[in-house]
Length: 100
Length: 194
Image 1 (cartoon, rainbow over the protein chains, first blue to last red):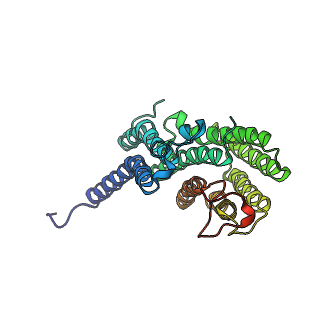
Image 2: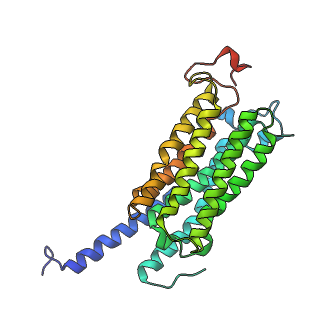
Image 3: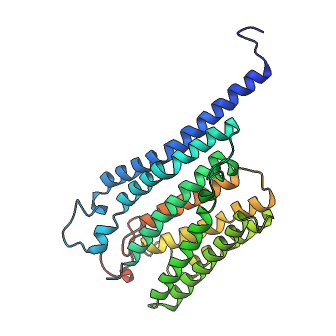
């Protein structure tokens, strides 16, 4: 074997690592992409955000502002759900026992 | 103090978006990794059951129209049934992949309820357009749990199911009580565009 010819096992390990890396990246990207989507929406349609157009708005308009809800959902996912899934993906690859 | 219909739709949209992101993460890492923490395994059945309970609450307040009352009650029943069956699947009480057919049936009933209870055409106003679009999206999306029941090992069903809920969330976020769609707003829709 040399730098051009590697064992099949080593090649399989490499592709498995790359696949795991891609899955980690995808899970970690979901939250920030959602937050970004909410921010872009807020700038594209500022009239959907009560803070920008407060005149004549009622209680529910202040509580429920769609672009900010999207940002909130993205943050909740990124902070509460994604880190645990990434940890479990890595420990699953190492063969650790499930937790919680 | 009761919220307008569009406010309720946006709150549901936020819930469905979170639900869709969680399901998408499950599709990416696979059920073995996703269910390593028990609370995550219970997340989708719990969210479906919670959505069912909230839809019952909305059904109670939908007394302005028998058709709306009936449609919301149907959605509540469909979500409750799908959530209950998935809860039993996660607990190991039900093991057959064919139990996905309950979810497929729930999606079909929900989509049909959307289509039947919208009395106006596609371009009447934005709300009517979204009712038609949501209805057909839900009817078409029944293919994903149907596929999961018949060919359980394909990841495409999980991805399709997750993306369906993100699409449903986007449609619900686009909903307004009175607004035009592609420049069309019927004179019968009431009020001016907001």
